[in-house]
Amino acid sequence: MFSKLLLAYDGSENSKRALDVAVEIAASSGAHLHVIKVVDTATLVGLELDDRLIEELRGRAERDVREAIDVAGSRGVKAEGSVLVGDPVESVLQQADAIGADLIVTGSRGLSTLKRVLLGSVSMGIVTGSRRPVLVVK
Image (cartoon, rainbow, N blue to C red; front, side, top):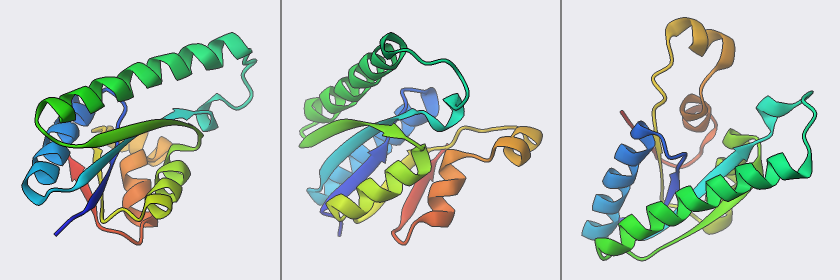
């Protein structure tokens, strides 16, 4: 059914639940799992960002992706990952197109109604912007 899954991963609890679901789907369908984490520069616009801060965020992201790949591997699922920098929604959708993902899996952030109105959510942006099936895990 699925041959390529894309997991948008941020290391949060909901994201870890999404990882478990993605690994289960990949294991049962023989799919390859692509794990990505996006260093969100869209929310950092206007802040004084030095290279050290960007590298620290990238390093944390690389550790999170490595953790997810290790979890997948421990359950017999072939996985690879990457860290992207930019707007999370755009980056996830572009990566899904680039790899030809059959399914995008992401966690729900569970924002309050007010925060959702003011900030939107990455998962909602992925659902509305994707031409591919999207599974949002709570």
